[in-house]
Image (cartoon, rainbow, N blue to C red):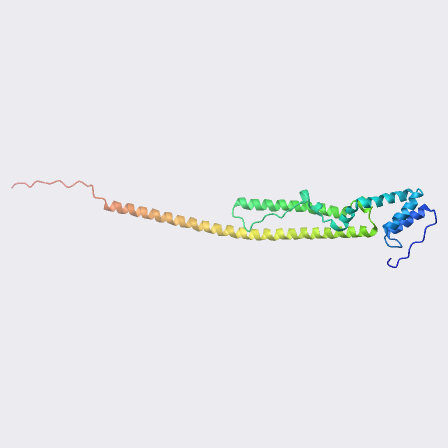
Length: 239
């Protein structure tokens, strides 16, 4: 297949050569990957007592019962395990603006909690990626070289997607936080100005009420009749 030359036939009755030929069919060395042909050669070698061939046949048998794991890592893996549990970091609820100190504190706490979760996720993600041990070794051992490549390419694509999503989330939260700060500061300034104007108005009204009260008291005093005693009447004298 693909222009490759078929491997030479092994010497008759040589179990080591039969094992090697089976491996060549498995790994696609000098021929295309052909697990059926690999099994036939492993069976011949194992029949002659070759322990390596017997182990290879066990691996091929595991492929039949665990084939779903190969499909999972080559096609279906989505990185959900890296976002599970304590690393599941839903975006914080950030309002357009906060109007009380309690609301401001609650929003800040939500952002700080999310940021701590996100940092934990990134630390675990980087450790997983740099370790290069995410695909279980027992699954890799069942795969052909082309399956190994497909699985690793698929996992790397998932890693790239998770990283891009994490960066996008950071930018989204930072943008919303900035808008929240601006709106909250604007509301606070407007509210402080309104309260100051209200205080000035209440002060003016109080002063006006006091002035009117004083004017009313003075008016009452001016209208109150005099309580001074009348002058004594002097009888006229005779001359």
